[in-house]
Length: 464
Image 1 (cartoon, rainbow, N blue to C red):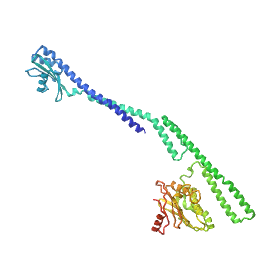
Image 2: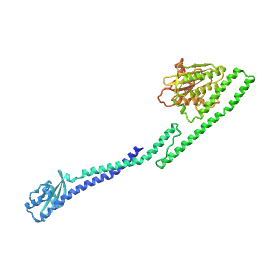
Image 3: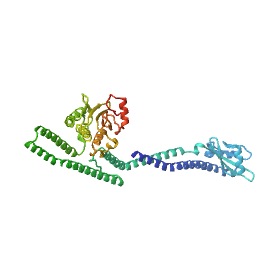
Image 4: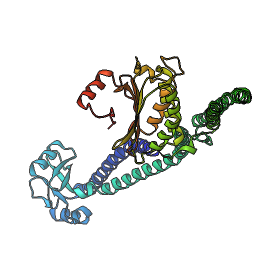
C-alpha cells in the first residue's frame, strides 16, 4: 500500500510540477531573447545622434568604434550609395528592404539574428544601422534556468513522496496489523487481537474485528462445553448399567458372559472419557504434527470388532502389510475413523454378511479400504454429506472419515466393493507435497471397469 500511495503522490506532484516548470522555462527563454534584442536596439539607437550631426565616413567609423557592439565587430552602418562601415552580417536585400520600409526589423542569419534600424537622413536618403546578435546571447542563461527548474521539480516530487509516505505509515501500519490478525484467526488462533489505530474507518474495523473474534471464541467455548456436558450425561446410565451387571453376577449371571459384558462396558466408559476430554480441548494443537502406524491401529481395533463379528457370524477378510505403515494423523483420530467405518458395516448390513478390510500403502498415499457384501449404498454422494444418512443413523461417520482424509490432503471415496456391497476408501496422503483436498465418488460402472482391467488386484485406486 505504501508503494501505491508513493506512486500516486509521484504522479500528482509530477503533473503539478510540469504544469509550472514548462511555462516558466519557455517564459525564461523568451525573456532572454527579448533582453538580447533590446540591448541591440539600445546600441543601434546610440548611433542615431551622430548621423544627425555628420555624414563624414571617417567620423562615423570613429563613432561606430566607440560603441561596444561596433568594437566587438557585430555592428555596421549602411549609408546610401556608399560601402558599409563596420562588419556586416545581413544580406544586401534585407538592408534595402529595411531602408525602403523605414521600419526596424530582425532577420535570421547564420549564427544568430541581425537587427536592422533605419534612420531617415532626408526625404530621399535613408541609412540603416545593423547590429548582429549571436545565438549565444539570444539564449543566454536559458539552459541554466531549465536545469534549476528541473531540480526544483524533482525536489518537489521527492518532498511530496516523502510526506505522502510518512502520512501513509499510519494507514499502512494499521492495515498490516489488521491483515496479520485476520491471518492468525484464519489459522485457528482465536487469541489474536489488534490495537485499533490509523484513520477512523480502520479504527472502527479493528474494533469490530476484536469484537467478532471475541464472540467467535465465546461461541466455540460454549459449543465445547455443551458437547462435554452432553457426553458427561452418559455417565449416569453407564453407572446404573454397571450396578445392574453386578447384581446379575450376584444372583444368576454367567461369569464368562458377565466378564465379557463388563469388558465391553469398560471400553464404552473409556470412549466416553475420550469424548469428554476431546470436547473440552480449546483447540486441536495437542494433536497437530502426530503420526501413527496405521497397521498397528487397525489390528488393535479389529481385535475389538472381531469378537462381535464372530458373534454375528461375519467372515472377515483382512489385508494388512506386515511392516509399519506410518500415516500423518494421531492414533486416536484414526481409531475413531476405523470404528466409524466398521460400525457402519455392523449397523447397516444383516448378520452373517462378510466384510473385508485392506490397508494399501501407495507411493504418495496410504489407503484404508472397508468393503462388505451388503446391499450397498444407493446414493454415495448423499451418504458422504454431513448429517445425511439413508440408514437411520446420524450421518456423521463418513463425514468424520472425510475430514480426517482431507486434513492430510487426501480424499474419501464411496463405491462398490469386490464383495458386491459398499466400499469406503479413506486415502491419507503421506507425501509432504501440498495438494488441494477433494472428495471424489466413483460410480459403480467405473469401479466395475477398473476391476475388469485388474481382476486379481484389490480395489485400491490410489489418488495421484
